[in-house]
Image (cartoon, rainbow, N blue to C red):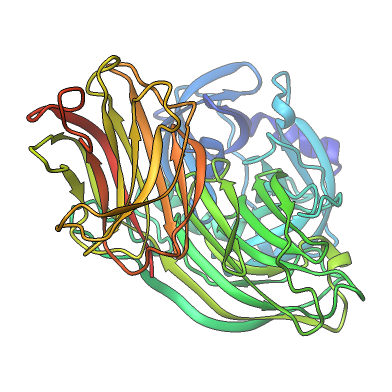
Length: 554
């Protein structure tokens, strides 16, 4: 068949799918004339977390589609629409026709077009099994753009042999890449359709949900430590990677990388990809040019999120560098050679995915043929939410500081909480966070004194239960501290080894030197640090909500 003949035959079965957050494609693969229903196959990332989507058929009629089932791992979803006797179902092909060099046709709604589907063609570049995502995939050079996702890939008999999923438009080093579109093969989606239709639970990698009790488990090592080698293959279309094959939303990962050669003779790069699924991922790496980089892969594009200069790299031929990344929710931290070098904005990709050691992030220019990047002590810790309290009140006592804290003792932690001001000027209030609270404790206190030299201080109390002896380590002024009655302030504190990072209302306030506060201890929230006629009176209360304490491991 000619391409024109294929388009005439199948276009009526290709649909446009729209949600509140985006547009994609799909295709009708089954109809029921008695009920006037039709079933549509598309990508999971097209329907996202929506239970209903709008499906436009034949560029004219719109239907409310019910999402029956999704498979996040393989990026597939089934949507049911009703009611029309003229729905046209497409014919599914056989993956045996997915032969390298065969001509294929892609039809969909790229770049948000609404008038009619667009047609492109190309050849099959490769067809292979991706064990990480448990699916067969086809690589094609047919032009795919944002909005093509979920649309059908046809063979020259007009049969659907793939679901277009994503296209890589550039390498993580910013080098333009062409001819790297990917589709999930027929032999994968055909075997899953019945389960997707019935909303049956689908097999996915094991994900342990965060503990939400006040006495949760501490963070645990779930992978490693182990070592390996990343073989340089400059001729390949992708960079070498070592998958841990764990599926995590949050993590604390580190490894020691061995330079493959001196930066004086050739360039190199290495680091980690995490939250890596079929269409999205974060990748953080260091380069022999003395820089660090953070990229987010977003379905059809690679976005640079951050970068910076490093002054503590060993770039010699036999040199090593330890790289570590901690990520929780929409925030993360990059460590190089045990030094915090950057905060990471992770809001672009927040779902679960694999964690991998990677190299050659700038493509072939960062891989010298015949060499390998070795690594050791590759270890992954799963953070645990050990304390979650939606709301409570700290009652001020006589000469005591009320605290709400973990039962277990933590070495490294991440604390967030929102605290309501009990009153406003001219009255004063004080509240804050404590960590590694055992015999002694470290603590940060914010106060509402106006026109003072500082409105927060970081101190260490030598004897938590004995006479009041403390040492103020540092203090400062946070201009975004809200002071009025009824206002609230969100506090955050990351504690990892010898470094801490203090946040106020989602803005970084200061990095903290924790080298004098070692060991383990309880973490939590406190208030009423100054009690008197002008401060919090006995019996008064300071309310807080959304207290989360994460254990990040030893």
